[in-house]
Amino acid sequence: MFQRIRDLREDNDLTQNQIATLLNISQSTYSRYENGDLDIPIQMLIKLANYYDTSIDYLVNMTDVRTSYKTSEH
Image (cartoon, rainbow, N blue to C red; front, top):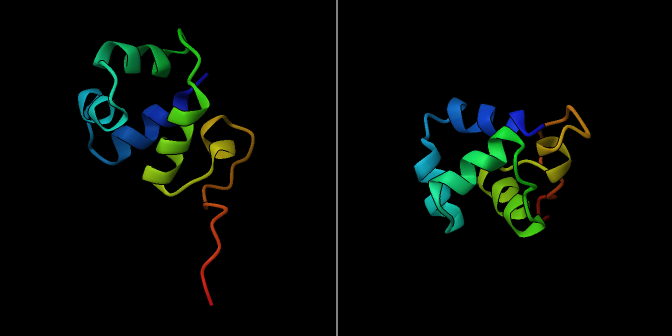
C-alpha cells in the first residue's frame, strides 16, 4: 500500500532506521508502515511529504504528480 515511501527512501539511499529517526519512531514501526501492516498517522505523512518535497497525495498513490503543492513566494 505504501510502496512510494519505500521507493523514495531507496531512491535517496536512506535506511529505514534513518527515516525512523527523522520521524522519532522505531525502525520496526517504520517497517510496518512501508509494508502496509500499520496505517501511517497524518503527522508522519506530513513529515515525510515535507522531507521528500512532495505531497501526501503522491505518498498514498492518489496522484502520480510528485511535485509538492507548496507555492513559491513572489
